[in-house]
Length: 266
Length: 266
Image (cartoon, rainbow over all chains, first blue to last red; front, side, top):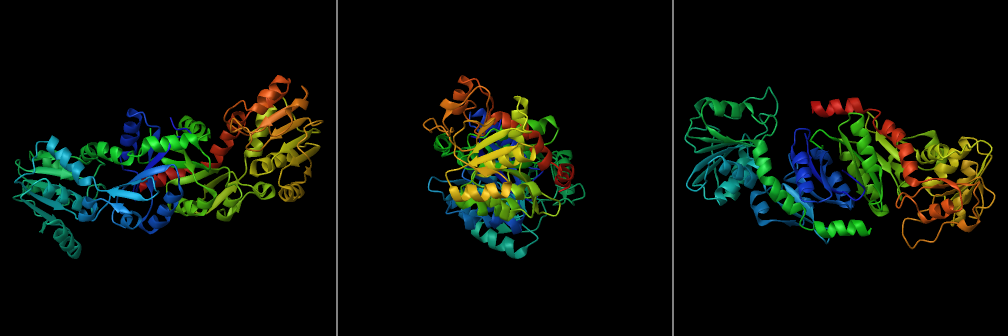
């Protein structure tokens, strides 16, 4: 139950109605005995800097999950990005440190990797295609490389963006043709809307391939439905979110005991 | 349960941990079948304008309860203050209208009046002393005058403020001496902290007098404990909040059906 001493966390993005984090993280806080909620916050790209000014003024808001389209824009508000976040060029979680400055990290890639491992995929020596090279795609490619994948190809309609990102990550660039990879990941928003085209040609997938998906609604996106029909093993967007929930909760509540005490003293 | 489509409302003030509105209003939304929460938001006076810039950018935040110290500062962000709010000089609730501009009203006085009526007090022909002439005190004095009280005296340590407010409200000014009034109201923050002095001399209260209190924690403030011991009837801060909850919920959810639909279409 929410009361006056409840600490605030949010997930900020646009659109926002489809995200699962408010339910997942609010439950996780309750399970840990923390009086806190995670609320959805819909902010457009144009409104993000004004929103962050408001966040800085909101003294009982301790951290945010950052989602599309803000994962790069948020860097200019984060005094302490992690080395991983700097390499990936993306931040998906921030917290207020005791001095009032924000620390940021990227957990998207680690989350999908955890979900894929649970499905039986082990990165060392494997090849992977990541379609879509916005924040989450870059995070996944970075995590696969860190975990020992032998070859990671990123593909994006924006050729300049994907070239720059691949160079920074140590990945290669290529088309969205999924043939020959051990793992194929959809990191585009395609699949959120019923009339979206598939992000890649699913008719050429084979049963030996793994498929990863970042979109959370519906859990079985058209790509995953097609992959399942062809015998692929897969990890869904909600499984990715679940796998990263614990690390997000750990990150944003790092100063929590102190914060809660401050709030009660106020 | 909070999910991605949950609409946001807040109560903004400093301090904030003592407020009851998050619990009361979140329950009321649930009882009405509305997927919405009311969260506590701690913002200092210095941070208020930056906070409001963030509110304007938060597209799924539909309204706010405004509490100390922001009830006057909020006027500069409200395009449509109610005539009542303009007369009282205070706004305690705002909502986003369909064009994106904010409408504001003042409900504090009506809330305490409702709680006092439930305790047996009827304003017509009665005299009242309101100690403390910040937003809530002015709202209560205004509501008593509107309801037909024959004489309403406001008292405040800030002589210039109380003189200007009384003139605008049609009230008189006086000391905090409670003798001779049918109703005595504490509208100062005194009573929130255990070591606060009483806002007025409770030893001269008599059993025929009513006492109203705006502070919510503890419910029985030292003033109310003293008043009860002397046989007075009284209305507590939580009773005031309860009485005004329905009108606040009505005001902030006036455009709700449309907002919820927009959110689901997004």
